[in-house]
Length: 162
Image (spheres, rainbow, N blue to C red):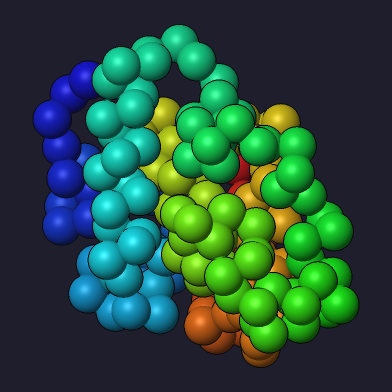
């Protein structure tokens, strides 16, 4: 893998990422409300790069499965329902993968990892997009999310177009 730092030098990102990720928020590595601006988002991108180096030909969903501790199928639309988010918010110690992540950290990790593939490879694997949409949908809920609606709209546009 070529060494580059697209967060500080966007011109080193894949051309397709630069074409799709036009909003400055995608390249902001200090704004907590940006996909890579939080510690969670920037760490997820670094972990993606490390994982990709060890798994050069693996699909993105295998990385997601690694993040989700082998529970990829459980990270689905049911987690994004208002009822489930209320349950998880009221009982954060019992939420999905609570021993590893809170809702925001888990969703940010999924989003940043998928966008990381786009920055490095110019694509997001189609079979990974539904998991990114679960993260986006959960983050749209005020009880789970910290992202602004315009940020989530931009992320959704990029994921759908990639």
